Image (cartoon, rainbow, N blue to C red; front, top):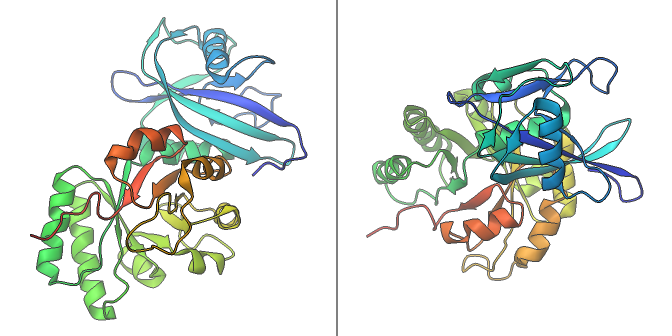
Length: 319
């Protein structure tokens, strides 16, 4: 995260897609910082420009288009050895003109699945994560009833279109948890969704899924516990935990509670103002957590969130 006593360069970038859903990348020219790497097109904000104005100017100057509607995707604070930046990234819904490299730079349209293996500046990696992650991060309740009922509920969640699931089962015996996790993995994989297991690194490694780190566990780690092919997420509640999550290289985090909940009545509620302030410090996508549902999606996005995380807002209630 950039320090408070240094000059921070404000940079903007745009996500453009073609008719096949591929995303436009531009190669950084020789002689520039990180030359040869591929990035999302954009550039620096000029003095007095808003990020939106800068993006419109940069994309016209760089690739010859006039952009229409845009939507904020993520803001990434990043410190390089040479400089610190804030990278504001927008999804471009419409544009006019034919994309071409007006400054002689190479351009290419790349499928999202292939961007993960493309050599890119480090600050662009959280953008790739934000593009891959859905607007909801569904957390399961403790599987207190039979596994069959739990898996039926999970099937309903997946049938509703949810694509990222955290299996949170802290009270199950090891053997039962392994069987349930394997069954959940089969269901999520068939649905084209991702599964993360709360806290159990060895099980996540064993069956090949992601891991969600509770804050206390995350703070004990000194490096990323899984390879880049698996999601690593963390629970965070304050600036210190967000900074440590960044230091060990998590892909995303949940931050909260935003509102006081019945299950955590003693927890300090951040509120949206403090959530937004903390979210702006995180160099990775952040989900808002705590007393929220999809009805809070717009305010969450306005506060900088990737989306909403939770249990009760997405998991079916027992009849």
